[in-house]
Amino acid sequence: MTQFLGVLAIFALLVISVYSIAKPAWAFALINLMFPFKQVLQGYFPALVVYGPQLSAAIAAIGAMAVLYKASKKELSIKTVFHPVTWATLALYAMVTFGLLYTPSPETAKRMYFDAIPYMVVFLLIYPFLLSSLDELRQGLFLTVLLGAIVTLLFLFNPSAEWQGGRFIINLGKTYGVTDFTSNPLALADTGGMMMICAAFMNFRDKGRLGFVFTIAGLVLGLALTVVSGSRGQIIFAVIIAVTMYPIARQVKNANQFIGVAAGVGFLMLLIYLTFTFALSEEATRRWSGNLVGEATEDRGKRLSMALSVFLSDPAAWVVGKGSNSFPFFTGSLIDYPHNIVAEIMLDYGIFGLTLFGITLYYTFSYGRDMIRIWGNDPVARGTVAAWIGTCMFALMTSLKQGSIIGQPTPFYYWIILGKIFFDEQARARQREFERELSGEPLPVASDLPEVPLSDDGYTPADAQYGQ
Image (tube, rainbow, N blue to C red; front, side, top):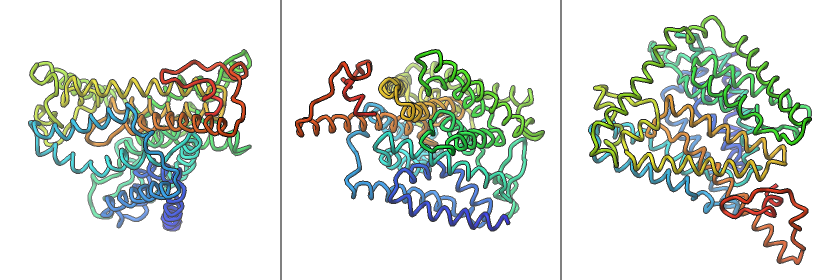
């Protein structure tokens, strides 16, 4: 039975891969699930373990072909990718490259850098071009939830899965007699948190009665995947975001809407509690023991304190930092990092790097705020925007406990897409207005349009109507 599931998974992946070339939203979902999908397949077929990089490269190639297909259909938007968040991110990664020249740990820095190049190419140069509208983002997130639920089930029933140290992992080295070669629980937890947030915030009313099923399945299975992975930070962050940001995903203008949102939050909390009760088995509770939580918290605190003290002790490095991946030099480890992306940027790239990070954060917040205002009256669009803002927030919070700017460009590629969709919809609204003027059709009367605050870039109420 398990072999049949494995064969079925490979067949489904092949079908999805071919289909994704003509449907970029599917390629978007495939890249979102790249790491857990690869681990699940390796669990069913251990021989694929040695082809891990090739599997990642194949998914990246599918994404690239989807972008080329989009370009051949003249549906590829390039200019909208290059907004302030993108420019600041590219400048930051230029500093990463430049930092290789003066880092005190050149060998480990170069090794990490060159190992990370394929992922930088995928997430910074391919991933943002797959989507060109809010509708495509909505479709991509829905597919991420749907396919993610299937991947979660394949993981839970994987023949190579077992409990180990309070984590439910896929033992990839069992066949080869290697005890410490296992699946990456952090990748699984990140996927589960993303699924949970998207399922909780998105409005699936267009799916009819199945909409409720998609919401429950995505939320429960996403949270369950995060819980069994044993990644405490992701669990806490996902739950906090789902509960506190839920009112952003649902409009509140009167008493009835307030009662509806309050009921939604209550139901969400009940579902979270029941999922915890079911998924938090005796093995999983080991990760929540006072000793382990205390040790992990103390370790993160020591790393943060060391990065700060090293930075402050050398005023000469305050402007451009100590250089890429300098942390191992001061800890005496071969491979190490602060586990906090802000601390790493501060230590390695100084005030200049922190300024670039602040720019990306500021504009991401600004775009998210304006998108909620513009699409606030459309329940479906509002839910999609809130789901992606929640995903961006989740990526930021996890980067503060495990983030590394060299290891993987999280959360920047999420933020780039948020800005891109914002400017894509702006361009589309202006095009529609131009077409109306050419046809001689009267423009909308301002008094007939919903009151939408004017954003910093001049996005008008008329644009808001067209954006919906």
